[in-house]
Image (spheres, rainbow, N blue to C red):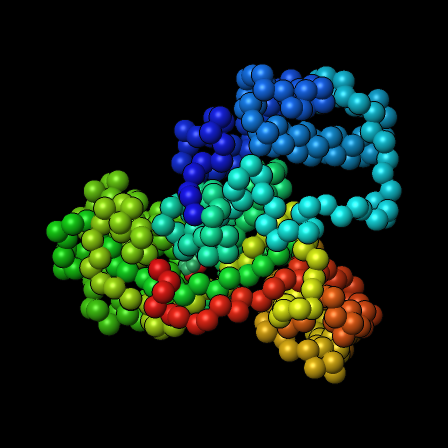
Length: 415
Ligand SMILES: O=C(O)C(=O)C[C@]1(C(=O)O)C=C[C@@H](O)C=C1
């Protein structure tokens, strides 16, 4: 796996990782891109903000497409049929498309890893040496890993065709679910196309020559801090814990600021990359510490039945938790195992009031339920289960049906 910035020709090359600011630049690029995309898609003479290669052209067209869609939505909202300008320039008239027509199969549907140029581009949150980067490498061994400063940015990188996939940690065997990422899965329209389970082996890292006794602070990703909480206490360190964006970012911070009183919890690879020493190895509270990541793409994969598949759904129902049993029994009756249930606040309707003049008003919290089950959407039993679930729910979305990670268990191999 090669970790690089997204495009050799773009202004992004100078920056270490993607930030929302980068998208700002991309989405406000001049209309010239639009003209170029329409008339000269294969030209080798593109100039200005768009690079000269096919990948840059594709990215520009994708951004353009999203502009046109938002323009169209704006037009529909305002009812202003003449509003067909992008950045002040006239564009082609939009032809309404019937979204229900079957889409022709594309190469994306047929190959598990569509290639642009030579390598798949995989966005992850963090900097080089983060566990998410390792997960990207495990899922797609020859990919270009694209660091992003936030999870939200990794989603946007895929939506804007700057990356082909995003890799997202969703749960850890010690720290539990990464709730923010469940919320993002719902807010965005990407599809889960795979999962990887990565053994996570944490190290305590410090500048060369620093001893444990000198430390007054340990910094890391909140998940990593919580996965090492007991061990840190047992080590008798007199340190405050501080949360930062990612584990490798913590290591980089210690190194670049020459902090002799601060250690980072990160991988052995982060120690190598940022010139730190390993003060303690394997400091996670459980040696079989493992994080589950999902891979996201713009298009779903076609579910199959020739290997074990998992399907992830999210649903809400109007009648509070009383129907939850019925929903779950749709799976039980068909012998479909559930591997995970998670509930999150229903942000559009967080509370349901049930009034009773005699005793007052009950305030019930409303939830979105996330369920993973062991079946492929290509199986009739899964389709029937979902048809039944739909009867009890007010909202149902399939987040993805994808191959299960069946790699042999080897806790010591991860870092
Ligand atoms: O900070 C990193 O290195 C990450 O990849 C993030 C993350 C997480 O979000 O849980 C991933 C795996 C580990 O469980 C700790 C941190």
